[in-house]
Image (cartoon, rainbow, N blue to C red; front, side, top):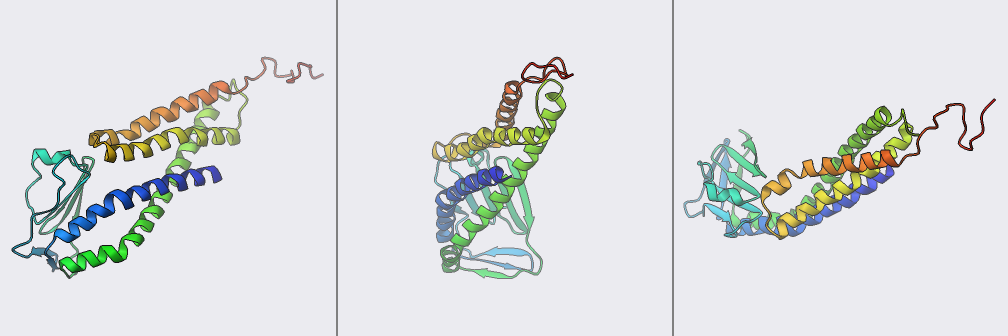
Length: 241
């Protein structure tokens, strides 16, 4: 358990540093571009001179932020890893091909100007990083704990008839088997941002994680000592009378 906690802390720190160095600057740039918007009675209104695109680096980028666009993004904008569109009735967040639609709360009222958005980013970016760290830590720990339990059950069911293994040892082996894939997936997140990899690389990284996990799990099972053919024979070769 402590090992999974340490693995979760390391990966959560990597994700938090990624958020602070890659996402926060983009949000700052988007905040500086907006000229203000008003959210009243669940409907978004922007000032006439507000730009439609708040952030766009012009190439395959990590994030594109737009305001008050009621059409689906054109095909060329699919190259972005994430697209945030603030619409009249809600917001659309497309992350690695997955669309999340959020409706504006009917009773929420906001009047945000450019200086307000910039001041918000200046005041709250550290708290946002702390929230990302907490969420990433919980996610990594819980998912890897579940994977370790599943791996221990698989080892107990498939390897125990011929190998010297108990549930405790199987859990420890499965927990260690989650490490290479977890670190690889975390590294892919940085590589995708640094080298502008295709979003599909990150979108399907879970499949690579599972492949590496099962390879290491099978290798651990094969390395376990085999049970003696004679159950009455001790490891030293002496027969129990």
